[in-house]
Length: 365
Picture 1 (tube, rainbow, N blue to C red):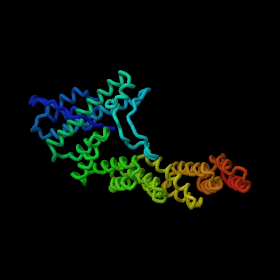
Picture 2: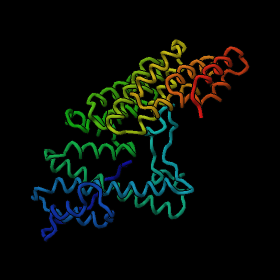
Picture 3: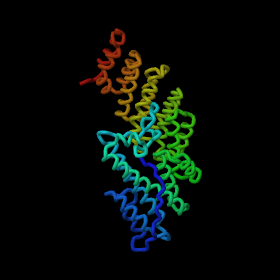
Picture 4: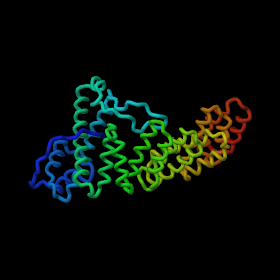
């Protein structure tokens, strides 16, 4: 995650030596350098750029992104430590575990600093320096080259950086959306607003933002935005709309290769369909099959989730019925889940007989 910074006041001397924007762009690579350049090197590269060099705007963006990567490295090290320094100050809403909260960087939180070890405080200081430099470079890039190519990307990068500290983030995103309404980065900005409203329980505003983020089905954030729209609808007690959003998220995520969203949306769709008492076992199975797009493993995981939801809701009879129709379609799954079906049947003789009869028809190892 990218973060925000304070303005850098020091003026840079104009360097006219052999190091140019082309050299700087080559040094930092297309996006993230490997291995990482140090912050000192990035500062030197930024100061070496000639004002009239036509490649300067692109070089500034690359240098800023490289600095953001350095900040991300520091945060990852802090988050991966045995004794973590807390970043988030507000508790997430159900379904928003991965959404941004009102973040207070430990470096700005006296209580967090007091708990941090000396190595952690050093990393926090390095994080702050990288973020301060990155945002200053992005602000300069947009101020001095507002009409250069990739200004939409620079505008989004600045807003995303500010968002981590909630420093003027909303206005930065709004500015980006107003200025570049047709930019592919605009969908990312709408995701920020969707998450922003989601964690506050402002469901209608969140729905509008996620719907706008998902307008372009080819956008890389469309599967996520569609998935989160499903959670918005669940929180609004609009289960049919939630199920439709989850099913659409699965389809979009499969096309884009977003495997994690496929799994999560499939799990939530199965649970949502199972909670609806109006869904007979055959209709429930049909919905799962349609959403799985004939993917056997995905269908099995969805059947598992739906069956567990029914059992946990004390709907043993419905769980057995779902197992019955699922076993007819996938005998392997039916054989593997027979113990759970018998457990769901409990002492109901009719249900036990149904499981036993279906088991006799399966070819189990």
